[in-house]
Image 1 (cartoon, one colour):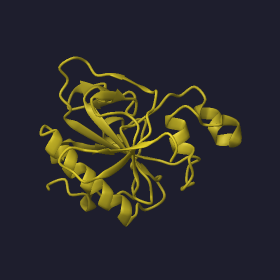
Image 2: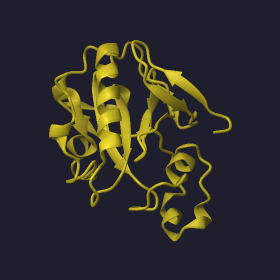
Image 3: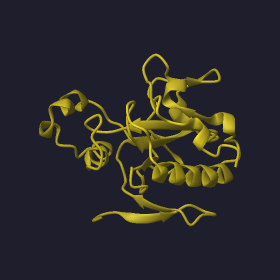
Image 4: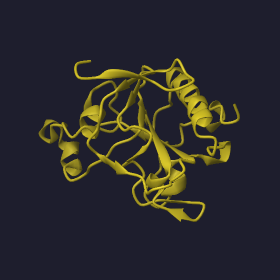
Length: 184
């Protein structure tokens, strides 16, 4: 892919394509990364295998190309990682920076989850099962991130629905929490 390069996380052979997003800022000084938030996204909803999510996270989405996109024009969103249905992992924001994935959120009495979390988006929606490629890559990524950030425990891997339950439902009812190796 033009303009991208590969990242390898320490202690891992995990291949990750890096496509930088301008939608990030810096974590508060001294912040410990101790939460992973799992999301689901597809653009337009239910459409997979296109570049729309990549373009949205990099502020290059053609908002006139699809009627649904008109409601996204004012949003600036990103995530640390995105796992496509093919299993390809893309990183948009380096871990040490604050991606804009959680919005208004709270976990264990702490607000602003973007400050202390990593966001992992899965290509999907509330109506479609995630596939084997995605679970395999998600498990691999979670294992590596838990080694890199020991404060992340099984109880600190949550869905967007858990930190913003009034606003969000993702990763949705078809995400099988039992298929991720949070104890590995």
